[in-house]
Every structure is written in C-alpha cells, then in structure tokens.
Amino acid sequence: ELVEGVRNFEDSFWFVEYLYFKALELLGDVRADLGRLETARHVEEIIKMFLIHWGGMRRTVGREGLDWEQLTRRLREAKDAFQKLYGKSLLDIDFDNVEVRDAIMRTYEAVNIKYIGATAISKILHLLNPEVYVMWDERIRRKYRVRGNAKGYIDFLKQMKKEVEEALKERAREKECSIKEVAEEICRELPSKKLGKEYSRKTLAKLIDEYNWWFVRYGL
Image (tube, rainbow, N blue to C red; front, side):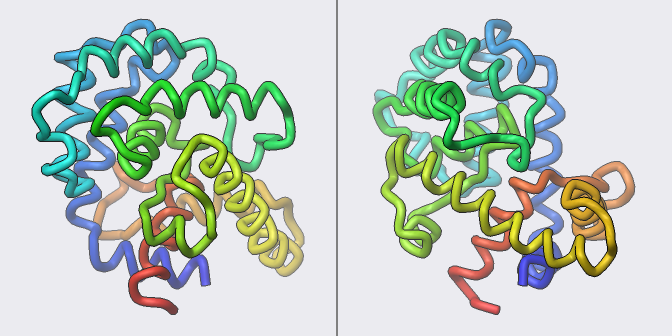
C-alpha cells in the first residue's frame, strides 16, 4: 500500500516536486546550524515561497501581521533542539526518550507563531529536517486521530514510525535484509523517474507524507 500510494502521488505531481527539491537544496547551508538563518534570504525567499507555491498556502502566509522576523528569531533560539535531531532519521528516533520528545516539542513551538497553523508548521519543520519531520494536514490528522498541537505531532510521528516499520519488516523478511536497507531502497526507487537522476532520492518521511496525502483523498 505504501509503494502504491507513493507511485500514484509521484505520477500525478512529479512536476511540482522540482520546487520541493530546490527548497531543500537552498536551505542546505542552514540545516546544520539554525543560527545562520536569515529572514530575507532563507525565511521569506525560500520558506515563504515554498509554502505559497508548493504548499498552496497563499492565503495563510499572505496575511498581514505574519511576523517573519519573529519566526526567524524563534528558529534561531531553538537551534540546539534542532541540532539534537540533526543527522537522525525517522527510524533512528526513540519517541519515548524524554530528550527527543522535548526537542520535538521545542522545535514545534518555535514555529507556532500567529497565523502559522499546524499544517504549515509541519511543512517548515520538514524543510529544516526532512529525515525526521513528516508533514501532515487536517485530513491526515483526522485519519490518525491526533490533535494539531505539539503533543499531537509527537504522537503522530511515533505512529508513523511504528506503521512504516511494520511495512518495512514484511519486505525485509522477503528480501532477507535489514529494515534500513529496505528503507533506503524505497527512498531511491520510488521517486518518479520523470524527475531525473539529479532528484533520485526522497526521504522516508517525505514518502510517508505522499502516501498519507494520496490515501486520505483517493484511497487505495
């Protein structure tokens, strides 16, 4: 089901995925150190434009009073929490670990400013760590019965890890290899061939979002 859902998404939306890859590329120099984040260069030029053009959130981010300087400042202040998760993947994270939960809570709340709702928060977090943060929207939250707050997001990530591990274990048994080997194979093989070799890998967190997005709208 995961593979089928992702393939359906990829076949339908491969063109706009160029914007996704470009946003990740342009934010590559700040992911390891949020202290280098700049409002004009990174937040307004990349994150804001990503939310508008890829996320379809023009009305959300175009509101008067949305303080991009405040968002930049809060992200910088949470750089230590982001650093704790840097270099990790969804499969690596222990969501029962107090320090991990605290780091996710702090990063979520850093983005939780006026006019930035739960869906936009997850998209911003994903851009800053695409290996760990899975994007969601209201329909996905309803599907998994989680609330649109920091605690609900932690519960959601924990549930995503559990469900994808179960799916990967089945494939790992068939191929007689490790879960991580199966995950890497899926991340490299599922992105649409239409994107070309330059965009040949997506993260497991991104593929989970694609599956969820397709499933809640069209089923399988």
